[in-house]
Amino acid sequence: MTMTETFSMDVKSIKKQLNKELEDKRYTHTLGVMDTAMLLASCYGISTQKAQLAGLLHDCAKKMKDKDSISLCETCHVEITDVEKRNTFLLHAKAGAELARIKYHVDDEEILSAIRCHTTGKPDMTILDKIIFIADYIEPNRSHSERLPYLRKLAFQDLDETLVQILHDTLLYLKEKGGEIDPMTKETYDYYIKERN
Ligand code: DGI
Ligand code: FE
Ligand code: FE
Image 1 (cartoon, rainbow, N blue to C red):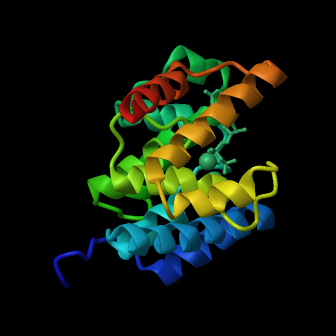
Image 2 (image 1 turned 90 degrees about the vertical axis):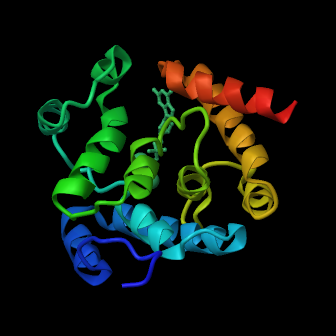
């Protein structure tokens, strides 16, 4: 094992398991996030191996039943916020980090952190946190925003600016469709707007 290598179940076995567990579209998205995260990692000089595992596993809890993600978080003493109780799909991030640790034997805190905050972001993210958050939004199978071509290019030039742009679009989208905004999403946006100035 080299210094940068982290311990986990091997990539091939994780892929096999996820392919079985996730819907086809979700699995394709997962591979897109993995590839995009690895490219960004090499662009920004961090471990591509960590980016690969974090990308591959970021949505690993997506098929869990609400009651199962809730009890997994409870068992692991992970706090569930009121917003998460009302919008349980948000929980797949926190539950995903616990599942990655327990089921896929990921012991690397940086990888687990990136999985944990991939939906809302958080203030003061690591480069890997940012890369997974961004890769999730821009991976090639996505087609949800007209701004994707712009964001895909920006991601390889300025991570923080890309983060701000994505959070801005997400907050706007949630306002328009009347989705409840997780204070963490807004806090992350405010934090990185302030950082920029
Ligand atoms: O799991 P994915 O679909 O690949 O991506 P994701 O985990 O980033 O989830 C995307 C959804 O999360 C997207 O529809 C916007 C939503 N989201 C992000 N922040 C918030 C949020 N939804 C609510 N209700 N509140 C938030 O603050
Ligand atoms: Fe997700
Ligand atoms: Fe995703």
